[in-house]
Image (tube, rainbow, N blue to C red):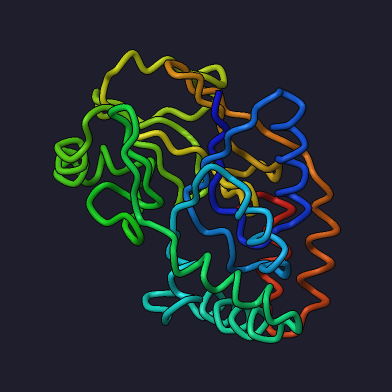
Length: 248
């Protein structure tokens, strides 16, 4: 079995809770689909943990911290610059260099066993969102996406878990009973967000893949500790703290 995680956003309490849940199931392989950092106050600590996983992809926030932000709202951009300053201020020169080299070495996609793993979408792995309502409002976009995937494609980026099937229907984990069997059919599977869920559930979200079935898991963590840490950090937007309580 493989644990699929994404969109940690430097939320160390959420990440530690998810890693404990993964360990409790005896799962040893972790695939990360990007956005390890951004928004939260623990970028270095989360990067250090990520270095021990099977593989990590680059997310748009990781890319922006490494290079320059583009197309971000003011709060997200502010967090990008704060994160960069925080990483540069690391007093341990070896740790500082190791983190930057890790970020620079992240890929933007991975094929494995006829599966595609990206952060955003098959067309634009870093930046394109695959929204739940795309099948209704942008059918051409969904058609183009399905033309680019061999079977299933696992994504993050929207922070909203669920499955967009080849019937052009998006279903949430609740609608699917928390799991779904793919059987080789084309699908875009959003694994949700560890550190900043936006589906009105504040619990951390990730998925387990056993070769045929996707199982979404929700993990409670100390949200208030994360809220307080953001509020106590000059340079991070207060809204990104308060939204965690409502999962939005």
